[in-house]
Each structure stands twice: as structure tokens, then as C-alpha cells.
Image (cartoon, rainbow, N blue to C red; front, side):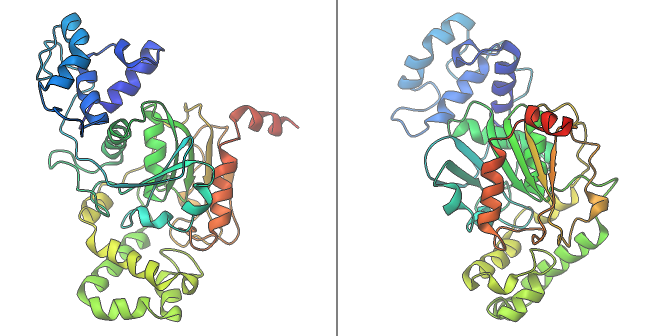
Length: 349
């Protein structure tokens, strides 16, 4: 992976924004080609790279191939770019999907959000059109968070950004916040807030649905074309109201589950979210009252800071974006205007 985490941490450690003043200049040699890889001559030791970075090379004795006598303390590995879609303009807003899904999970919500923000929806490593992490980097939530930071840097986002995630994506957003990547977090039905392990029925449900869809592809596609069958098949894993999900979207849900290259490894590396109590950024957590995957036992409050805002929308299931797209978008946009200080004032009334 590239040095994105280092870049965020260097900025935090130095309390400065200009990239040329990074404490670990080796990181800059990785950042610049990642930001604009399509420019002519952009190769290791290429002309443009040499021109832009020559002052840094000279000052810190960095070789043109990016090597440096003092290795970056945060480590460096090759990074695979994550696929993403982008809509709208303005302040960036990053969307992260759940396990077995893709950026398409946010399709119903994006039209509402993109009226106000630059909306970036990623395919997490090993899902959708993104390749898995490198073989020597298991898809733990921490490794995925570091890869997310790398990919944000790669598209030019070098400052903390507003993160929104559903299920695994919610935990990923919270984990990224611990790395200094998040300006705020909205976590919808986030995983990881259980005591020791995920609910046993969750593994049975997801693995059995994936097996069925792969073993009986024609029949499973036919079921997704039936409103009543969709209601039954998606009731627990997605949300009540599956019959109202467009057939095209339902088929995409099925296809994303079947084709997920890192489904098994990511699910089996699922872990408890820990050490989030010291986060100071605005955090909103929403668990739908009709969430059939993560019940009250998987909604621990003590692992997040006291200022966290907890919501329980009455009609929402585990993945509520199709059930209530306007409501989900409204929660996300309103959360960006809320601060921990406002929570303290409200609690004191």
C-alpha cells in the first residue's frame, strides 16, 4: 500500500497542512504519482516527477526511485486501487458498503446526497470491481482502513473526510477514524460492536445465501425477479420491504454476493471494534429497529465516545438504503452539521 496513513499521521503530528513539509519526505515520493498517475512521463525517475520533486530529493537525499536511507516509520507496500464512483460537487463525502455488497448498495441514496456533496462510493478490496488486498495483507478491518486511507490519497483527498458506512462499512469508517482519516463518521448498522464474535445466525445466513445463489444461479435470479420472493429472500439480510427493490437492483445484490472475491476471508477476519472511546470527531450510529442481523447484543455503546449520537429509525432494517433512501440521506446530511459540543449542550438541558 502507499503511504496514505503516514501522510495523515504526519500532518497530525506536525500540525501542518502543506505536503512538502511532511516529517517523512519519503511519503511524498509515493503520494505525487498516486495523485496524478496519467501525466506524460510519469514513471519512476520520469522527467515530470523529477522536476516536481527535485527540491525534496536534494534536501533529503532521496533517490529518484523513491528509496531513502531512513525508511518511513509507518511502513509501505504496493497498493491496488479501489474502484469507485463519483457524483456531485463540493465537500467530499465517502460511502462504504457492507460485506458481500458493492458501491451499488448506495445507488438509491446517491441522487439525494449528490445535490449537496461530492459523493464518492468505493468498492472495498475484494468486492465489486476492486481486487483483494495483497496476499500478505489479510482483510482485517485495520488493514482495510489503511487501504482506504491509501485510496483517498490516490484520488487527491489528503485531509480528514466525512465517512459514511453500512454494516462492515460502518466499522471500517470507525476504524479509519482511529487513523485520523475521518472528519466525521455516520455508521449505519455497523459491525464489530458485539461482545466477542458476530451473531452466529449472521454467518449462517450470509454463507447459505451465497451458496444457494452460486449453486442454483438460474433459480436464484428467477427469485429476485419475483416481488414476493424478494421480500422473503432479502427480509433479514437487507431489510423489510424487499418487494419494492427494483428487480435490476435485486439482481445486482445477488451478483455482488456471488462474485465477491474476498467474501470468505473478509467475513472470517471480522473482529470486535475496540479503543474508540478517545475519538473526538462527530459520530452518529444508527441501528434500525427492524435490523434482523445485529440486535441489541451487537450494539455496545461503551466502545465509542460518550458524545456519540445513537439513533433507532423505526422502519429500517440492516441495509435501509432501499427502504428509506430519503431518510438515510437526511440522516447523513444532518449529521454533518452536528457536533459533540451540541450533544453536550443537549444533554445538559
